[in-house]
Image (tube, rainbow, N blue to C red; front, side):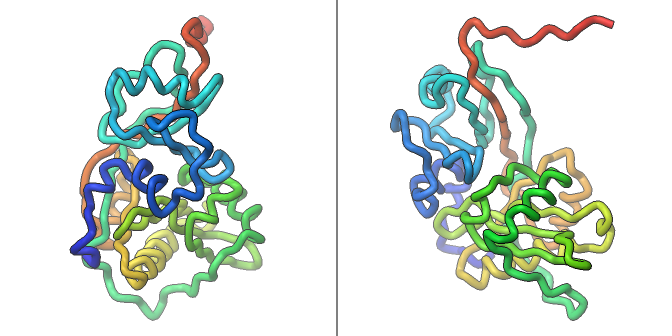
Length: 246
């Protein structure tokens, strides 16, 4: 690893520390000091300093009526009544260790800009690598590969804390899968992060065994497991919709 002096404990609550540090300019206006979130056009994630029943009960006021948030912690716990969970799953947080050397066959990836956002949104909508919005590109360096004028692969930088930068939005068009583009573009971003003096890390759903295998081969090591929850606040009298009988 390149960041021997970096405090990797910041990765335990990476959204909180990112929005109180290098990415503070992307924080939405705050209702309280207990909750912080990205501006909605940038990212969907929010964070609390500690996760306990008191914090979760207070979260309804922090996000506001019909508010939506995504939490990224080792364990989020059950949300109070009135919350609708859209997704809950476990991710592996992996940090780069020994990266393989560049290959002469590696494609040349181009730096993407705001002019490329419509194509990036279309590709992420098709491949679903995780939340990607109109201003997500502002969080860091994004690169891509075009074939016959079409964007077929991309990846870039999302969360960052002192010493660490996250690789995110790794995706390949279905017509180009099986060519190793996901691995190649991940390495391109990881090497760029390391060249800048930081270390790369990423998150991957623990059910995505194929991606986990690729990341391990690229030199990423498991650091911890983390739970991700996407939820929307409705109200204390809200009830989950009943499934219709057959």
